Length: 165
Image (cartoon, rainbow, N blue to C red):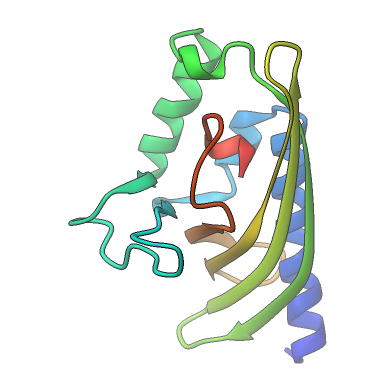
């Protein structure tokens, strides 16, 4: 598959993920992830260095399976997540998607993102950064094996969760 076609197929998956998050269709969103997926939002160790070892350093979010993501969704749906009550309205914007085919049906992806969120009690919040993905499968059947979310902000004024980055 040519680079332009691969990038278009990958961008379609990223746009679908963003739409599902914005529509709070959590269970449809979970289908996009492999059972062994890693979802990682590293913290900064200082103004320019990110955590490099999620197992040994502090992270903003580090979930190592689809089951872990499903447990997070369960807490939100049942109201057990105080930080996510009320759940903010979100608008995900994805740009500059670049995909590179790897061996064994894997694709490395990088994209820029911006998420605007809003709740009556917290008001508007705008976050930015870039994504790094590893997808497995084939176009139209890709699943997310790895998602690293690098945030521009190093200090958080409010909470973050899977739907807000």
